[in-house]
Amino acid sequence: MFELKKSGDKFHFVLKAGNGQVILSSQMYASKSGAMNGIESVKTNCGNDDCWERKTAKNGKFHFNLKSTNGQIIGSSQMYAGESGMENGIDSVRNNAPGADVKEVE
Image (cartoon, rainbow, N blue to C red; front, side):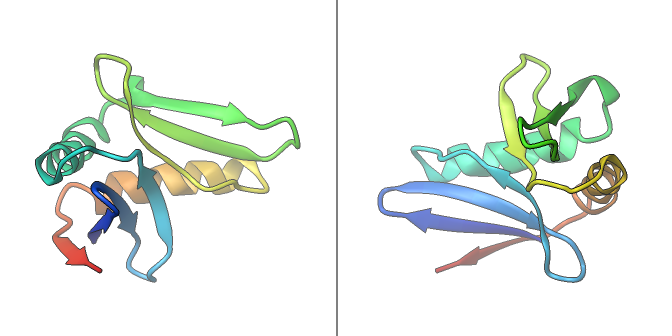
């Protein structure tokens, strides 16, 4: 499930797994339509291996970014203690995003 939220005059979204855990968070968008386009971009690009950027933080934890084909970051993950957790997060986005509904929340 994608949750679309308004913060002040900007919009952002999160993708939640079936258990309610946030698996991907977006940047801030100036408009609701921009955020909706971001959600569509997640759905379109999550199956493309070239769009995943795997990273290791200075503290040794792992995280990822999903990028569009033009290289812009669409969404980012939380920090994971291990590399396998990060890979499971990527798999979860791949499995959940394509058919996920969008819910607007306060």
